[in-house]
Length: 606
Ligand code: M6R
Image (cartoon, rainbow, N blue to C red; front, side, top):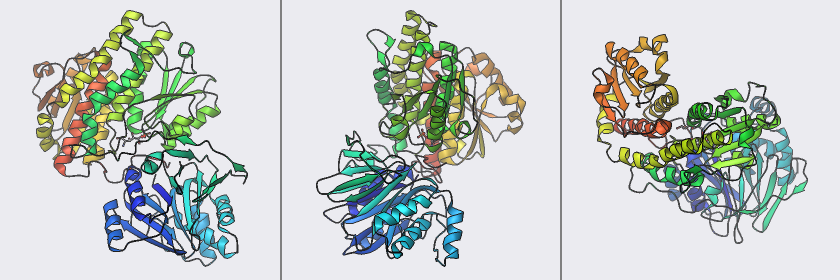
């Protein structure tokens, strides 16, 4: 899940490579580098850490080549050091690489046995030596790359430049995305269209097994069998504007605050407000005939799916099988041909989700996906795509993408319930009206963050924090715990409140804050009983409810009062305090909120 870019330019390219890398930083940010060819010679600059370190290096030691490649890294093999940073190179070739070479050990042993000196711990360095060996045998660059690609196992995207070739770049894709851009006498490549948006909106995507030879005048693509192929050239809708933080200190804060708007925008795509009904875009899937759904996703997107399980089962009376994609893909689940398989992903590139989807394709499932990046692999390979209109999400911790996923899933559940005759028009109007109120309630919550700020002082001292919820808000508790651990590094766990007495209650003492998601729905009284069990053992309760503090029936450390909402939409509403608690705690603790350690926005490796 690194980001790669390449430019065959008419002017020096280093500055533009860095500009494109900034747009790919969501894919990885532990080191970065660029390499160029100038007067036939290869040269590179690399730096550990964030991109500004690379910018500083380039300012003091500029590169002026008009052909170059760049990389921003999320380490897989080898620590995030400058030595391990890309581009890797020999005196003949330089490469940037995203993905994992699975036969790394065999190739490494083979090269070492041949006397090759390896200077890094990376799998990427092996690629550069394999190509070099081919070049030394007299092959031209295209043949050298083709021979090398045949030796590589795994999912990857690569781009090469060569000594003595001022007008040549070769790229290949096997499992990791790669877009090629067409300019005026220039050519570009990047891990996605967003990286290329400042330069061109005319792009094509390589397909798995493709490798491409780029010159300033054009492009020749071959498939894995070496046959020339054409890939459709399309207009990208990716925005050329570099997304900024607006008036916010972090992207995460901006994205939290965008939720009333983007959730409203997303709902408007699926709701006919005049008729108070859900109106899905044309789908090649007959919702009335769906009698079983399997859902697969990762992280926050998985929690959105877990909420949807409650909606689909209760409203549409359809049984739902759900699992994290990294398990789903290997479970060899027996699936009835023709059933609906649903995949949820902000990026649309998550490797495990994509693999789970391909398993379902092989089992003759009808594939629907909920994605935020419309040009992503998951979107492109689905039978039906239900987009979230969240806009680019830059903060690594997912916020607005989650609530937009919930908005789409809620609409899909209502549409399916109606199609299956499980709800009537009146019930549908009631649910649509509840959804319509969500943006307003979100705005109300975001108007005053003082309580989250003061709570952050207490939470920052905690070693462990528990999150409890029941029913449809159990996944919201899981999401709250994930948010806190991702960006504050405090250990946090979410539990179904009813499970408390089956183990987790042993953890509770006066040092453990317990965040309770407690809307006044049918589970409220049961949740309140669980709160009292916590309070009786000295636990520090953070009670989040549309009921008053006294409804908790015991002393609580902090009560956060939310607007009264329809039980159907509570997951969308209660997600916001989960995000705000995590955000303010992380800010108080001074962590890197938008780019927390060890994480990447888009997990394109297994
Ligand atoms: O792009 P995806 O939605 O497929 O990503 C899935 C997870 O990697 C993602 O939700 C992750 O858990 C986030 N960091 C959560 O904040």
